Image 1 (cartoon, rainbow, N blue to C red):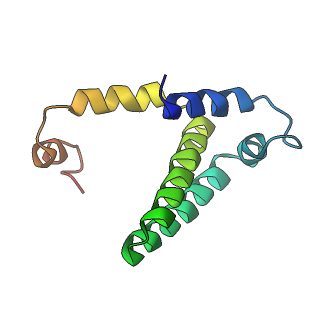
Image 2: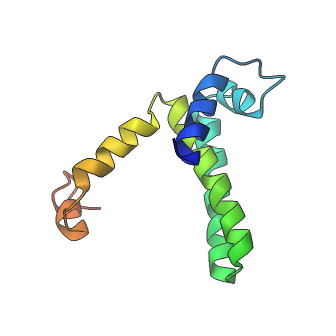
Image 3: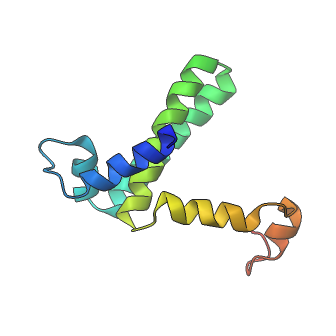
Amino acid sequence: MSALARLAATVEARRTADPDSSWTARLLAKGPEKCAEKFGEEAIEAVIEAVKGDRARLTSEAADVLFHLLVMLAARDVSLADVEAELARREGKSGLAEKAARPSGGN
């Protein structure tokens, strides 16, 4: 099992944990909107580090992004397996063709 899969399992296990004893449970207790907000904050921090070019800081922020993405997904009952299935569905397709096939025309 990959580190990402283990983290996803931990996030799932924390859904029923006491918010006073778990940061993940505390985030989930605040609802999907707060989880999405936190994910957005972490994504911005990762973008800033990518622009700065600090590899170590970008790596750290990317780990935060992945964690908060998993929390946000869990808040909406979307699993890592769901995301992996979608990636598998897209595998081998041109990114441009896949985007053009979307109902919004790739926007």
